[in-house]
Length: 313
Image 1 (cartoon, rainbow, N blue to C red):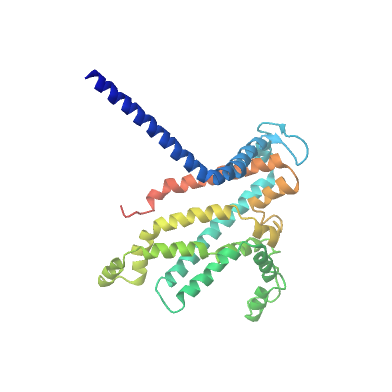
Image 2 (cartoon, one colour):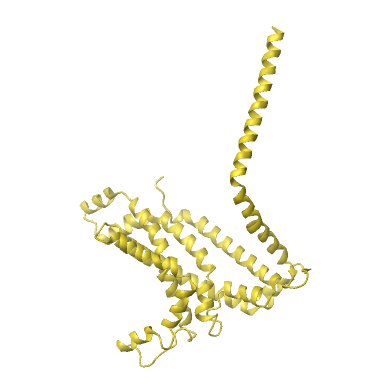
């Protein structure tokens, strides 16, 4: 009896070892498959992230060795850097107006294309194109010409009799930022596609029941469409907020931060300090500040979502 018990114990040990070896082999195979991504993540994401955190506590230029100064960069940014506060003000102004306009345009087009009509797929693709091209240098150059003093926008307003003389919309402090906001709103293709996917998930029976009860189109939109679409609105709001907070190309090409720093968005100011002026330590500190701001804004949106986002469960 004892011999049989010992034999069973030996078999269980062998099975256990075989099981462990099999698990290790499977894990190694899995790591082998993700190795290219893992190397890329460690080399091009994690390592630069950690180095930028280290550099943010140093005085470091393109040449020379970094000199540890502790919180010196952060104190200088918050206490003496007026352009830092200006860039934050401009960026918040830009995001507060650009995000709602983009989402409103995206939702309006999604509602229009919700039903299948002739050439609907063509128009969906056509309206998605600005999201692909809108952030490019070519479109920024075209936009700069369009809203310049000799641009087509002035020609249209002059022909309609709305203005008496040409205006440089990108050269006027009060209107320059709005040319960038309009460009952001024009790039509504990506959230439009997401809204379309969300609209198709709403049961048609709800609209049919509302129609039988005598609900108007507006009531159906406000009482059915918007509440059931809030998870999609939440997703689009979060993604577009992060994307527009980091806007750079348009401000750099169209206005270069002018006039009078009225379009000096945060990413452009970071580029100037960190790359153009070669203050890599200072630029790294600016980068970590915007990371913290975005993290806090994201947490706030998540914490308040339970008050306005409705799920089926």
